Picture 1 (cartoon, helix red, strand yellow):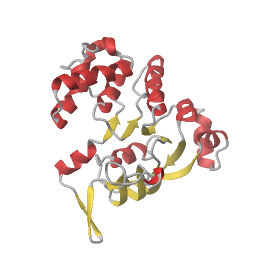
Picture 2: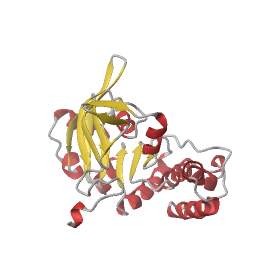
Picture 3: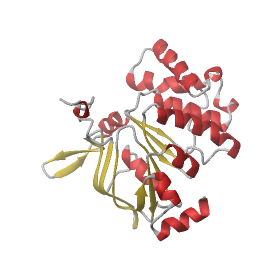
Picture 4: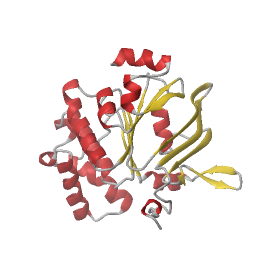
Length: 267
């Protein structure tokens, strides 16, 4: 068996994309937010999703870990169908507990940090491994301190969220997501709620994470980050993929008029 086909923990092989979307559609009432989205993210790849507000980027991200149900199409992570099981030629939604168990392997960082205000930074990072995975508290604390060091906040382990800057809170949120040892990290505009001077410290952590080989999908308006770090860039508008490709190529030489109009306003 060649290295390219080594089985993964899920039983999939390394040739299977980490994420595969096939004709994924999603509506909220009469508003169709995603219109037959198809794309793939390889293992170790960093994909940036860009586009105007309301283009469907965040909804697509939330569908990947089944925070939103898809109305049509299929989404797989590491070769495993997300949120549904297939019986014959029909898909049936998984029970909430089973879907939640799937979600453990997918880390997600939101615009807002969503830290527990009554817990210290370390306690926030420890919470999920102890509560969800039943991890030993001493081991979870040691791992939590390692992760806080990794995001540059080892000295803030005992600080409460109210005593941390927005950038520091977001870095704690990243450490918290990493504490579950995810195979995939999703970032939903992780710097959009930050003061401009705090954006860099979060992006630096994300750059280091990308360099470590983590598979990442990032919804962002930070075009410099997309150009420097991403392996692929997808421009979405109106619920469809308008243009996709190498970030430098798409940003420097967009082919679609809608992409050109958008980039002219953000670059």
